[in-house]
Image (cartoon, rainbow, N blue to C red):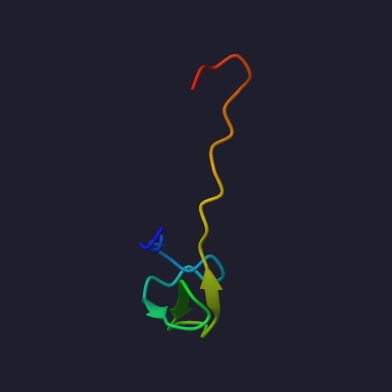
Length: 52
């Protein structure tokens, strides 16, 4: 997968001014609290009995 997931707000402070960071890969910098974080899609958790 080459595209990064795009967050709409910082999970720590709620600020919406986010900028992509080169390192570590697929990271985001929050301009409000200066934290760098990553967003990763892990998968779907379907209830038992639901067909894929």
